Image 1 (cartoon, rainbow, N blue to C red):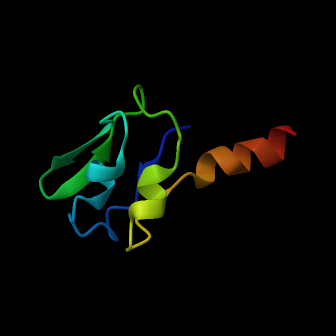
Image 2 (spheres, rainbow, N blue to C red; image 1 turned 135 degrees about the horizontal axis):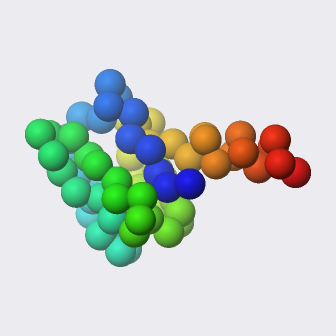
Length: 67
């Protein structure tokens, strides 16, 4: 599953946009938006976000439930 932006925590700083190696993140109305069809789950965006606004939690929960 692709990265997910927690809108309430996103401050529009664009650090995630700049850190994404494949440009899967764009800005829309001052919020980051991830294109799930492009995201390669490298977690560079999550590591760069100083507000904790990016998660991959859903994919981790799926792994726990399936394996």
